[in-house]
Amino acid sequence: MAQFLELFGSLTISTMITWIIAISFITGIVWKTIPKVTEWYDKRKADKEVLANYRKDVEKIYETIKESNNATNGSFAEIKDSVNNICQAQIESLNDRIRQKCRYYISLGYIPEDEVEDFERMMKTYEKIGGNHGLQKKYSKTMELKVKIKEDEK
Image (cartoon, rainbow, N blue to C red; front, side, top):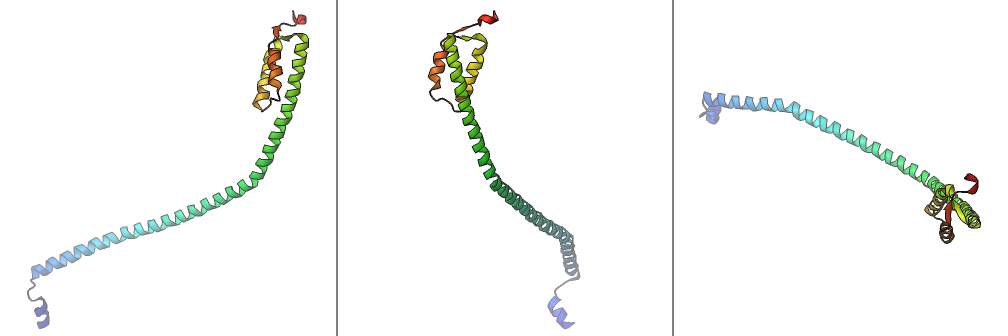
């Protein structure tokens, strides 16, 4: 007891009670905080797992798109070639058809009124898909002809 009095001799009961209340208060705060900290930690851990799963999912989607893209690049190239070939064939067909119409209208000496719009649209389409082949000159010369109603339509 002498040693106790030597260490804590100047300690009064009210000081001791104050210290006990302070320690109890701090202990209470710590015990109330532990579940919240644990909950925060668990949630953070779960969020990390969710993010890791999202990352895996995104990587899988990326790989799928990458594989799909590689597979379709060949298809797109084939489709592009086919479209270009079809356009070339259409250019040749329109070129021939426009030349025939030019010769026909020049031989008539006029353009029938009901064929003007179709003839103009045919030439515009021909130019849009890349045709020219010097046909513009012949078309312009043909468009200088008179426009009139065909005799058999009167």
